[in-house]
Amino acid sequence: AVLEAVARTLKATPTSAFRRVTLPLASRGILLGAVLAWARAGEPAGELRSAGHVLAIAFAPDGGTLAAGEESGAIRLWDPASRRQLAVLSGHRGEAGSLAFRPDGRMLVSAGADSTIRFWDVERRRELGSPLALGRVGGLFIALSPDGELLAGGGGVERGIRLWRVGRDGAAPEPEVVLRGHTQNVFGVTFSPDGTTIASSGGDGVRLWDVDSRVQRGRLLGAGSAPLYDVAFAPDGGRLAVAGPGNLVLVWKKLAWSDDLEALAERLCAIVSRNLTRAEWDELRTGRGYERTCPQWPAGE
Image (cartoon, rainbow, N blue to C red; front, side, top):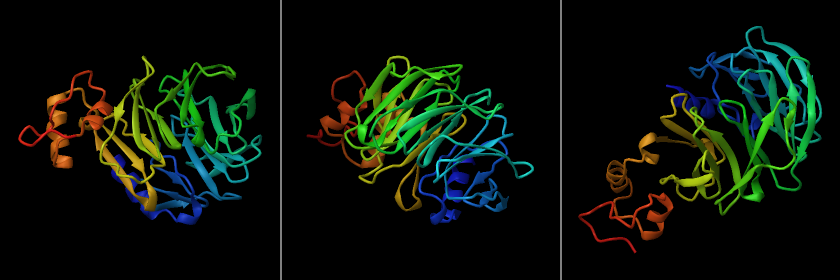
């Protein structure tokens, strides 16, 4: 029911309160708007008074702290149980539009419109190390791997996803690698719960990357031509939700990126009602030559 709750929450959220929404639901099931908190069932659960529009939210893994990035660049930390503000983290000189906690909850990572990624000591309420300066790359996005050792991020117009190794005080200035494959702006990125896959969303749809080899595994079909702004895995990794325009939420089941080619071919035939073209087949990166997904029909061009 988690992804269905995401869809209900997005439809219930006042559009003026959000320009971009991150979707990691905590076990306590609360989402923050500019002044509203939403329960998992989609009903208001209370208010968290913010001084400005909230552009990003993230729960600490234990659900005990909620971070909210504001249009001003401030990041507010809240106790969601008591609705009490704990601290304000200041450093960004522009919108704080993306947030992520490390698994132990002691470090918060933020990305801002000032083209920096910053690292914060949550307990001491102070910035750690030096920020990563990415230059003029557009709106930033970030995600941490489940073990907290890898940071994925970048800027929309860069069309690439940078990977950094994260230490106690942040990350080295230069990324280990840049994942390239998107042909249009990238807006969101996330890791699968088992840490083996990165999903990224952008103007050209959703792409999947293998974390160990750092290569693209393929693309997800069925997104159409609309840009996709944010992406999140279900806790069991079996489904992937992507936020699109007009409060649209698309959900893929794991079959859509399965290694079971026979089952995948049958599913693709049912979805598109034709054989894939040879270019579309190549995008699946199966390692095999072209095969018809609908054997009863002519091959695609």
